[in-house]
Length: 117
Image (cartoon, rainbow, N blue to C red; front, side):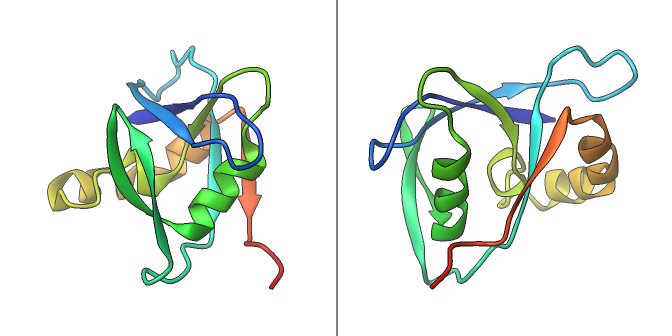
């Protein structure tokens, strides 16, 4: 699978992430946190820097990443919309099957329902 290093920042500073391969099994040594979040409307989207390129994400995920990022150190996260190639149906199908394993091997699961209106 892939996890994403979320670089530190505060407030409205641009979000920056770097995807990293990760093995998820009994020998997993990489600590990562999984995000469980509400996708929200595809009409409410924004962009973020992903390996030097801008990608489109839902605004609700942007809000979650801003809420969960640390000001002074990177954070390693797994979020389905970032870590699964949503355009690759074969990859998506394989990853969905192992989502239970992904969540169970995470050091913690962060839950995001969205901002209050």
